[in-house]
Amino acid sequence: MKELFGSETRKALSILGRGQTHRSLIRAYGEVKLAAIQGQQESASLYPDLYFHRLCDAARAVIRGDHDNQFPLPLSQGGAGTSLHMNLCEVLAELANSYAREAGESYQARPLEELAAFQSTNDTFSTAVILMSYRIVEETERKIIALQEGLVSRETLYQEWLMCGRTEMQDALPMTLGQLFGSWAGPVERDRWRLNKVRERLRQIPLGGTAIGTGYSAPRDYVFAAEKALRRITGLPLCRSQNLCDQVAHTDALAEAAQAMGLCASNLVKWTGDLLLYSSSFLKEIPQTEQQYGSTIMPAKSNPVLIELIRGLSLDVQSSAELISRYSSQGQMQLNACLPFMAEHMIRISEKLGQALTTASELLLPALNPDRHRLEQNLIHSDAILNSLRDVLGYETIKNLLPRIKDAGLSSRSDLIQWLREESNIGKIAELKDLEDRFGLQRLTTGGI
Image 1 (spheres, rainbow, N blue to C red):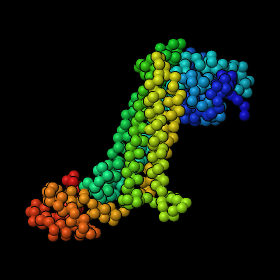
Image 2: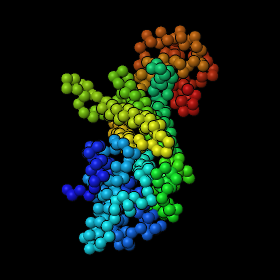
Image 3: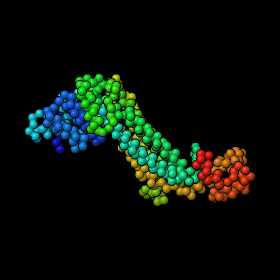
């Protein structure tokens, strides 16, 4: 394999070790450099016309992924991304120069002269990280929508399935399985809203601010041309920050995006924690289709592998989100040198949270098989059914009925209704016209319970 990169990349390899820059970041940085090249040409005619087109072709090849093996640097690095910027400048120059040589043209660009003119790592690399992160948030939002739709559809499907609601691991009051799925859909809906709002702040870029946000060495016309070109190249609603010194120095918008995705992961942990209990041997109310054999020694055991996978991935995401916040706080004066580490963990969040959400919507939800008979049986044998009669029978009467009803050996809702009519004064209470309504859907669906 011919190396397209040069001496600065080799120096970085000797310090950082060999890795692989992630495809999403190579693409984003390639787009930033293409926008910068077009801005250079529009504002200063920096290249001969033919060579300019060679250089644009080289950038497009990098964006497509034709030369990903020429970006062997890991993101765990010091230098605020300078090694990555030099790597990209060297590759683009060598590609364009080789195109020119093959065509018999004499002009040859220099990586750190023409390819870095009007630019700094500090505005170009941070713009690339923002661009990459914006797409991560967009893709995460799409996967959240898929999960939300799956939960809402089950909210409707199970709106007439009665079950026992519980607080503090104790039977509380009746509810429907549809209401349970609706309660799970709520946090997912808020996750979707949060990420949508985060994108508004994340779309602001520092391109043109150069080293410290002052725009040193960048002509005014170049700044506007590069910004316009980047919007055209990406098709995204990016906008240049009105405070470039702030945008170069601070990374809290990335931290906010990471925390929003961390909250999504937290909601997945809570949801799957509920499902662990509902599918457990203790309740058996929402069992799952067996995914694989659960034990090498216990043939009758089935493991909640999908739930455990989602929980493990989500905890990883929470950890990365917290690390990004900590890295964001480490900025000093006019720059945050930890940006490559933040980019590394944004990629990690994208991969882990994306897998967790896809597993949830495409594998776990279809594997859930609620047991309607078990749900009702658990409700009939719970204290929740009596708690729902508190306003009819009174607090003390229910306390007195509890030990007797547990000894009655009731097996169905009709048994319970008959027992209550015979053993309590409930049938004499004029305002309770139909006991079936009490244990049916009327009060649940109108919010009465």
